[in-house]
Length: 283
Image 1 (spheres, one colour):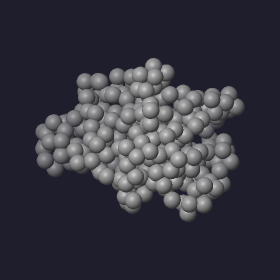
Image 2 (image 1 turned 45 degrees about the vertical axis):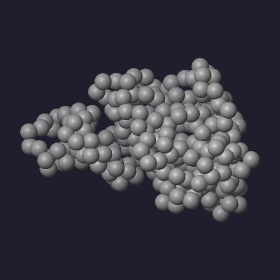
Image 3 (image 1 turned 90 degrees about the horizontal axis):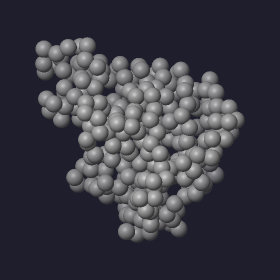
Image 4 (image 1 turned 180 degrees about the vertical axis):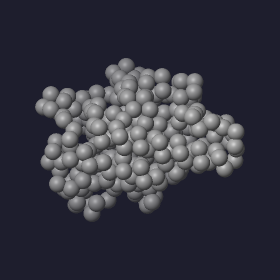
């Protein structure tokens, strides 16, 4: 049972985010970390015999990447298909917490919106600039994003940057009314929406970076403004499971027949423009 007392809840309501500890989450994050390492060692064994099985998760991944980025890319792809990943994102203690805190009757866990990121040092390919998650996910407005790292995420390794208190209103965006995947593979090339009239300097000066330990949980409201951190370390990757839970019985969600962003249905990926036309402006 996760203990979030009235003081912590007040802090969450004020700032829009909270770091919490949970033994079940920490244990399942460790199981996932071990499973990923076993998969990488099995891949190494299939192509190379002279390697040490005592290498840590970073050294093992870096070895694969040094041999061929295609090999490390295969690991990136398969993590979400591991049972240990599914166990982590469907963790009971977090569902119980949300029902207790927000009086939700039915949890909404859209698997397609659950991610796993491995950010290598100096790699900005998947850097995600300032945004509110709701704009891209359009599940319930009260939805929560969970960020669970498998290794410590320090400032150097790219701690997520958050603007405290920014969850209290939905912000307008500019962009495309239709989802168009980028042709160069970079996140910035296919971002459907960007904040309207946002001043990057103001966002940076008023925001904070949030370091987090392995197995801890960073939870934040779907309206919180945040961006990816930059991994400026030399040899350490950033291993993070990112998943969302919402209120399936949210009235607006029910009225639109549970329409939300679903990666297997590209037409939904720019759905914010249809659900909230007053907050959308063509680029």
